[in-house]
Length: 299
Length: 274
Image (cartoon, rainbow over all chains, first blue to last red; front, side, top):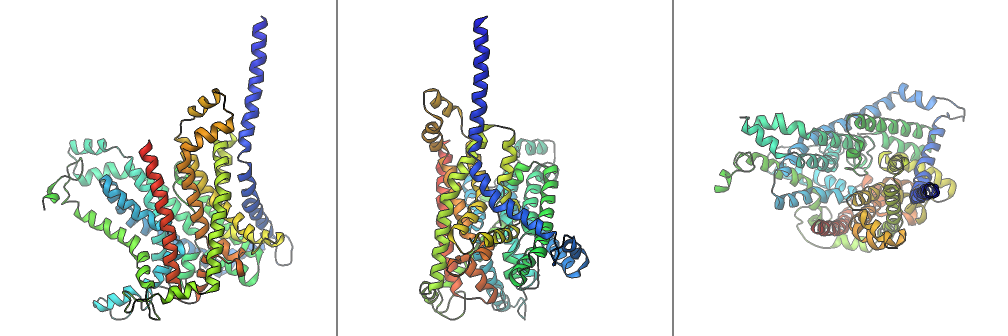
């Protein structure tokens, strides 16, 4: 009798002890939490608050209704979606073959291939954008060589417009699509393909009916990351677009830099954030969030 | 051309029938790396314009870079900020990753998502938010402000990498150490940390790169003597194509390649171990 009471008491104490330790361990994440709170959540919340006031400081939805009424704002959102959609589409069209190519290589070659994908990933975004500016400009390498070989007569307009923006953005986004896709292709069990071949499927058939469906989770994860990063992109369109491609983030910068208009800029930012979170939420519903978040980085 | 007839995979398709795939793959890889690398030879041109290949080789643009006080100041600001970001982010990310992993409470999942929000919120929104807050705190154009902002931006990457390292580590080893009388802190420092050190170092290197590359937040909150190199480059690029930037780019490629190779070498040693 006496022993069971002490056991119960001990168990109680142990449980309390464990709970305290858990809280203590949980406390280890506090510095990170405080930092994110101070630098991201509070300021962004503050901006949201600011966006609810019009120029006279009166509470109103003016900043938001203006977005729907003003043609220039509608156009900026259209451009943002168009650029993001096209970039994602081109990334899929050239990223899928690349990931498939990498997934079929032997170990030795794939190391080299992956380094070629990862190296630009680590190289400064600005340096890569500058490189494209140099290569694509009127007297740049591509135009010079193209005319020397007689492929075209007059210099092509490759930069300071939509073309340049798309080329630069695809170059920067491609690794974000290829890496998760490659990972998902590598995890496909070869036995399925052998079974398909054994049952008489041609290589083309076994690719489309077995391999391709199994690679879709990685493809969707890549598409999500690329699309979300494109929506908020700033540097590449600002440099390679030459003022002709105006995305939401660039408009926000101009509003602050030139007009110091926090209300309108914040409203645009909030809409951009909501769109981003909506895309992430839909992706989360369709596939596991871990895969999406574990594969990408910041822009 | 015997190689072309040999099977390329377990499904017996030959290399010859795969040739188109190899050609496309190599072309796309070339698209990924060549444009960036071509800046390196171009930066060694003696003429006024960027050419490939340069007609006269020389280090004129490097002299321009190294003799310019503004460019040098900006370079040092960037390097200092990146180092401080590493020093701030790595311990904080390691603590958070460990705490969330072992505490195993239900809120841990939610906190983790909260800590990686800097990766999901559009950077330009973070930038104007930080700018707005810093104006009140007079942290604009200060190293402290820059490092704080960069550390938060670098946190998600470091946290994800270190958490992944912890997940592939057998926590029983730490339990053994503790049952033999080591305190939790000692067990972590002596047993766990040495075994997850590769992911910690990778996280630290990523933090360096995030800070070193960052343009948008720096565009708002740093200026004058505190302008980072990427900020100065961005502002210069919007106006004209200055060949000095080719030499700066080459130096930056050099720095990031060294960091990248470090990460690769350290990642390799991890694979060999397991």
